[in-house]
Amino acid sequence: MTEYSEERLSEARLAAAAAAAEVDRQELVAKLCEKEGLAFASLTEDQLGPMLVTYEHKPVGELHTTSPSALHNWHARRYREDGSLSDPTGPYGTARAAAASLIPRREAEPGPSKAG
Image (cartoon, rainbow, N blue to C red; front, side, top):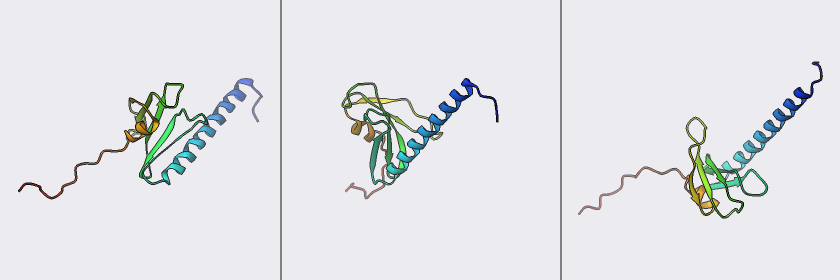
């Protein structure tokens, strides 16, 4: 066993807190990925974010707010291919509007020609 050190104890506590936060995040993502369509939920009890967003069983991004009110200034950040977050878009008036902005755009599907 190593010698006791207040610094090591502090570092271990920080590492444990970070690991616990990551477990909470992954559990929330798993729960959201079970849902159909657009789903989002806050990582915090006050519902002011950050919020994780999934669409069709896949994580698509996060929502953040700079406002003390849950009804104003929501910003959406899409997950990039490497897992990092994009620059924020917004502000949106509600968390739902910000979440909806993260729905991936579908390419135009070829359909019957309307030319006559």
